[in-house]
Length: 153
Image 1 (cartoon, rainbow, N blue to C red):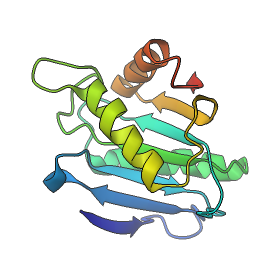
Image 2: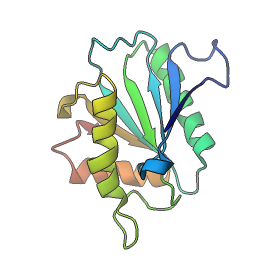
Image 3: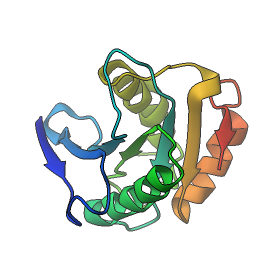
Image 4: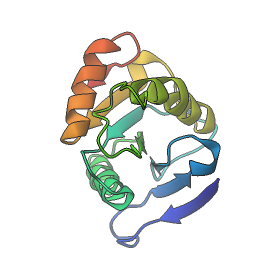
């Protein structure tokens, strides 16, 4: 597992931190996490999970997280953004014959994020958004997992 801090646009773009986590060796999803500028491990924050679109490379997904972070900072909203990378690039964020992506998302990724970072960890502070294929996934998971998600955007 490796960690690196990314801010390809420089400090003027975001004040928070964008962290890239590579889990490939452990069998978990690679992901990136945006921590707001006022992030303090002693406080709890809501979380916005972001699902990327079909065929997106990891670098494209990071760009979407940065775009979201810029808007959150402009609105002065302190929320953690966590984005898993679908290594199949085309799972539609559902369980298939060979890859159980919905299961990985809910049973591995979300628990890892909510254990590792200072997240409130209840339904009222958990949100989901997506782009393209990720929008489909966000809508589907928002409907299917209403007991776990406050809103699907």
